[in-house]
Image (cartoon, rainbow, N blue to C red; front, side, top):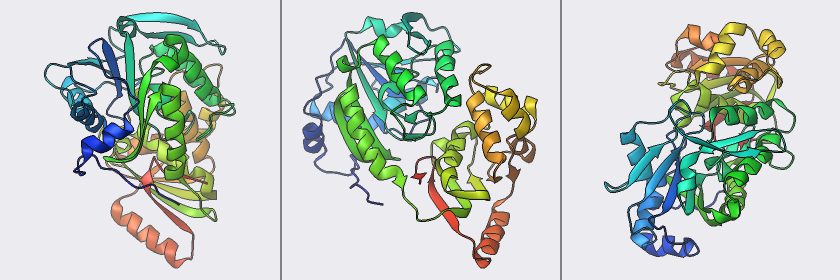
Length: 381
């Protein structure tokens, strides 16, 4: 796979000169601007970008940050300040769908999604988003309009959008005729015309920046999407008997996020093959609603029978994907989750020593093995 040259902003001596050149079309960030940034479940090196903006003079005043959490639990204020690279005079706001946000309604999309969003956005003349573009297993890609919707949307709005993950076309790397992707962009454009939003869109590998795009939100996203395809899309010559996926930060914090690694490589797994998910999951299962459904329904067959578009609850798509894969593959897990928890997601827990033994056995048996070192980010076809 062809890789783009990496740019690490903190390691270059000519940071200001290079970033100023890249950010030359970005307008100056004024006091009546809201900067919307990703939360701790994304690897976006936001603080690097904010520091570069300050060094180039594009950001020379105090600014308000809004952490776009979508359906995630928000980070602490201390963590949020670090994420944003905020100074003492900057203000930090957390979007929390379980908290006391005030919401405004922008109407309904063509797919009947009620577009309710954090009313904070109405207080600002200008909105700037900073996001990272990566493959997403049902929304096509992260980044772009997702900072606005579902990033700062209400619970019911997110739920109505995400039910489309149960329908045909909601696939990884797909944007045309992907109902989730199209509904996200339609919703976000109803909240604030996207051509009025200035954006910085990144493709990054942990703290290393692979590419950086600026402009209106649609312009920056399209350019970053092209770079993301080149960097994350891995072509292989055959399907594999066994796949070992090492989930990278920050997706390895919980099972909800780690599951993306399974989706990103499942298309190159042979029928009845094995995927080993290696993920610490120190924050355990993540969003509880999908795990409650797995526990309640008890088997892949029951999950497949009882979850559908019509009775969708937020998180159901995750339970459905676990069940769908378990019907056709052996799922093993290495990490800190206990065996009982792992079994409820239709996986079997093994330890690192068992994984070493299994890998040796598979290799001696001449089986095709894929070692996915970029679990949750790399996408195979």
